[in-house]
Amino acid sequence: MPDPVLETERLILRRVGEDDVDAHDRILNTPTMMKHLGGVMERHEIEKRHAKSMALFARDGFSFLFLIEKATGELVGYCGIKWVDNEHAPNQGDHEVGWLIREDRWRRGYAEEAMRAVLDWAFGRVGARHVVALTSHPNIGSWKLMEKLGMERREDLDFVDPSYPEADSPTIQYSLTKEQWETVKCTGPA
Ligand SMILES: CC(C)(COP(=O)(O)OP(=O)(O)OC[C@H]1O[C@@H](n2cnc3c(N)ncnc32)[C@H](O)[C@@H]1OP(=O)(O)O)[C@@H](O)C(=O)NCCC(=O)NCCS
Image (cartoon, rainbow, N blue to C red; front, side):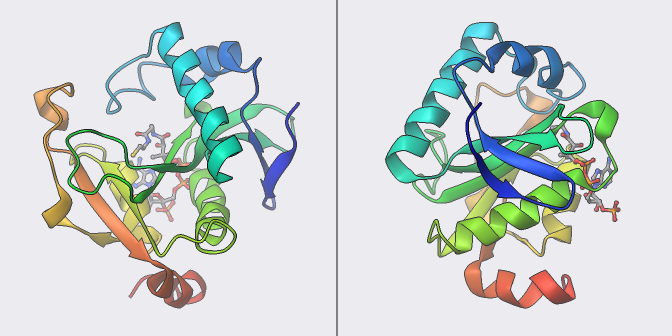
């Protein structure tokens, strides 16, 4: 099993490994969880995503990570950092953060807990000056979390990705600078 990268009170965040496709497909690829993310993925799409994630970590020292619940040892989510690589985005090459929590673990504070560690990582060892997060208007839980983390709505970065259904278009963005994070992380958003 790949070594842990980050640890929080209730979670271990570890790299994705060669044997993780089945677990991802079974636990994190449900219609409910993927509703605003383009729908349930084919197995080969998960394989491709994992291969990209492993290559990214090897090259740049960051990627999306598996969230393991300390209390049970079970996979409960997937979150981390990647480069913005959507061909329609106006800000390709920015550091992008994102998250996905197993649906039977929603509203326990896991996404927020994991992302606080990921943001410290992004602005610390990874060396990002700012990060963005991408979502859509109907994905209320996701953008509420962005706001709770102190992220700022960036209408200037919104774009249309024709591969997404109309209901989840446009893709909207939030951003957070290292300085904003230093200010909000202890006090909470203004
Ligand atoms: C969005 C998601 C990651 C939230 O995970 P979670 O572990 O349930 O979130 P948390 O418990 O850490 O919630 C933190 C904050 O996010 C916001 N939030 C999370 N889910 C919410 C919901 N369903 N409705 C409104 N606000 C929500 C709230 O501000 C919450 O703080 P609060 O509990 O003090 O009100 C989860 O719903 C998910 O995986 N959704 C499907 C995948 C997805 O769309 N990912 C986003 C890609 S951009």
